[in-house]
Image 1 (tube, rainbow, N blue to C red):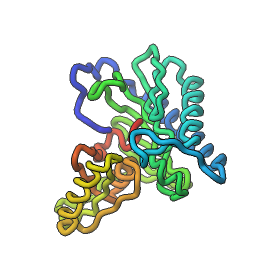
Image 2: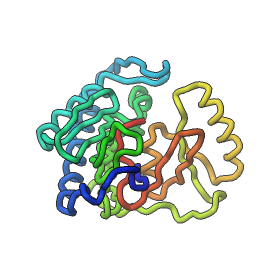
Image 3: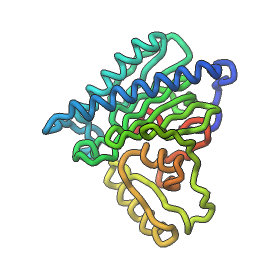
Length: 252
């Protein structure tokens, strides 16, 4: 999430140097790639799952295996750093850097073998357990089904790596709502989903079109690549690429 400077956090005192940011970005990409290979190559014929907040909020055995693999890789590569995972992993480090890991963002898509899911890994300064208490500095989002790797670090812009081609990402130039292709997502709570559906119905006549692919990172990456414009609705925040960090996070 690219946000204003966290309240009470002296980021100038703890922000990594340029070389360190490059190293953090390299680690984020390494971890995303190894976890991406796992969830594709080791995917069972029948994916077992349990539920979390509601019956439609699922977590699979591969979510947990991917998170365990990310934890092991990060502990080996960055032993002093903290780690917080989407599925409950919480390791407190001794240094200023922590990692946020979403081992499969878009789990429902993964469960149904739809290709729009990702592994998201981000390095942050501050305390990732406190809302507004941390700031992302480097991250990677990998769609292993398509082979697309989105990566970014503070001050370095955001890039898409697709095969042997790397290109700088830019937000859509559209300035009017009517020319915006809007990307969004929906809550797991049925009541909230109903209100969001009503909001989308009101919005649809005013925009070019709406896309909902599942998982927040698809909106984040689409916005950074100029493919969609993000929508914020009823507490669901979708982040615009700010040229410093893009898409990689540990939640949702």
